[in-house]
Length: 118
Image: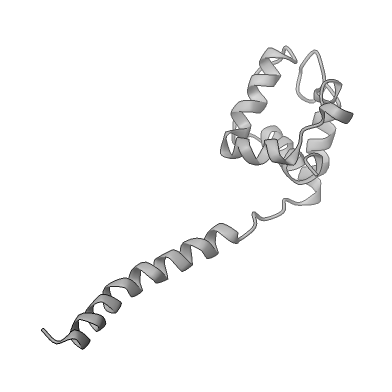
């Protein structure tokens, strides 16, 4: 077999893999859409008051100043944020878990991800 045929065949096999990798990297670098300001404001309200979540202790009681949630922690938690929030709501705040797709959980996640973790 001719060496030029082997090179072009190898290149033909590598191009789809290369293009797939480039698209993967592009998709990974697209930032998440910023939630609307109403969701963030509602999340701030829920984080700072116990009435909206029906808990005994508001989130801010433990998560202020040097105990504030850090962006690196939020990044590490990733998609498990609703489970972590619910764990704290039940164990620390003496409340009930929220549905992961419910409006309160969505507002809390918006606030934590886009404002509180800065």
